Image (spheres, rainbow, N blue to C red):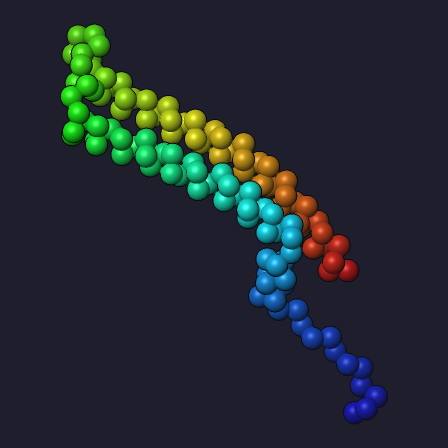
Length: 113
């Protein structure tokens, strides 16, 4: 028994994950994601809920712009544009995050050997 080669302890995916999650690169990536996602979510939520609040408590959005079209309709339509803008910004930010993920993965592949 003393002559048997010792087998390496199998790598646990959960241990790998914990180690990766504690690296400075991963923490920087998560920090960058939060710096975009939290403000974008807050801005969109405020913009989204502004319409019912403003129309419920103030009359200025009921002012007609042209024919039956009033400022409330225009504000509601602008929410579609706001959603598209945030989606475009998110994709741009996600592409930057993907580059960080690629660096982390490349580093980890180098550590596996």
